[in-house]
Every structure is written in C-alpha cells, then in structure tokens.
Image (cartoon, rainbow, N blue to C red):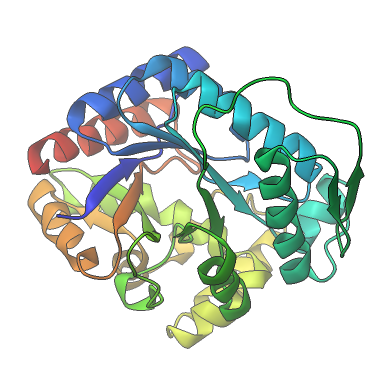
Length: 322
C-alpha cells in the first residue's frame, strides 16, 4: 500500500504538535513542515520533538531564501534532533515570492537549484575545503563541522512542477514532491528503487460531500490565481477559471477567498474531497504512481474551527485506512 503522510495544521504551534502526534499515531509515515506562514525549519524542529517514529521533512523549505550552507547546517541539526528521521525538502517558489518577498535572485532557477543541492551535499559531507562555482558558489577553507553526523547520508527531496524541475529532481535528488494540486494522472514516471515519489493532495473529508467540496474550494481558487500555474490549468480545461481567479485577485479579492469561482468538477479533479468512503477510494488512485501521498487538510479562507474539524476527519480517515 502507498505510504500515507500528513502535513499537519495548527492555529498555534502547540496545536500543530498535537496534530503531528495524532497523525503519527494514526499511521502517518512522514509529517511535513511547509514554508508560507511559518518557518519550515523551526516547524520541523518542533515536529521532531513531538514525534518518535514518523519521518520529519520540510515540504518545502525555500531553496534560495537562505544560503546553501545555512540550509545544510539546519538539515544536519534537524537530523540529529530527530535521531535520523529528517528529510530535506527544497523548492524554488515563484519569481515574485523570491524577488519581492525575500529580495533574492530567481533567474536561471534550474541551475541555481542544482548548485544549491551540490553545495548542501558538499557541506554535509564535511570535507575541507568546500568549493563549488556556478550560479550559486561557495569557497570555504579551514572549516570543518566538529560534530559527528547522525548518519552517513541525509536524503534531499526537490519539489517541481515544470518538466525541467522534475527532470532535475530525478537527476540529483533522492525524491520528488508534487504540488498540492497534482492529480494522479499528472504524476511523472519517476518511480525507481531508492527514489521516493511523493504525491500530494488537499484532503477534505465530511459526511456531506457539499461541505467537503466547499472547504476545499478555496485551496483550488488560491492556486488558480497564481499566473505561474496558468498553463497547467489551461491544459486541464480550466483556463477560464484561472483567468477569472487572476482577474478577481487584481480587482482586490483575497487570494484565499476565491472558492466561489471554482466548479465542483475542478475541485474533484485537483483534490480528494467527499465522504469518508469516497476519499478512501480516491487514495487508491495514487497507488502504482507514487510511493507516498502527502495529505493536508483544507485551511485557505476557512475559520480555524472548520479547518480543525476537517483535520480531525482527515486523521480519522488515515487511522481507518492504515
């Protein structure tokens, strides 16, 4: 059976950690820490202390907003803190996020990410000197980390949407992380021994399928408003919805409150939403296409109590199927 992972949610860090422990108890293979409203590395550290058997991963940490050396040091610390359960998940984000939010370059993202992985691996290997020249470079002499590594090798995962990024993950990483809106039919053929293909899905479970879809709608609407993903929506036949979401965003609508623009067929295409029986059946659609499926409760534009209820139902489903 496919490994089922969870990206837990919490209105507070304390609640997030309870959710992570509940996910582990329900059978989650890995708990993932995203990076949007919290720091992925700080969250992963907290998840490591709240769990004991599940893997802990960043899903994803922004690859360009930190130096590769700082990323490597954080990864090594997290692997030690988690007793060898950590997986470093990296992604580029989009141009606007890097340049406007973080003030870092985004040009040539594929070679930039390739260099990032190479430098992280070099730092983790612990040699002296550490030298790499490229779009991102490092030149370190006379430095050596004075602590023994927790294990000889720490796995690195890359997130990617376009073909070049997906190919890079298959070439230089130990795993690939899908976008949250990646239907089973769009998972690339990367499966091979030793490489971990991690699909992802917003999972909205409720006895009333209309409630489940409504909770998931804002997740789809949010990503539909991001122009970087317009091509994918158009190829799936939802280009007009994406255009409407972009127009609504420009007109002043909140990005996390565009679910009313999203039809049910689009929600069903991009999310796992419906009754417990329907959602359990949908999980099987990913078998044979991915090694793991990272599930997250709907949260965009929802009151905390609704996300809390949705996560409770998700973890109940996880416990039932595992």
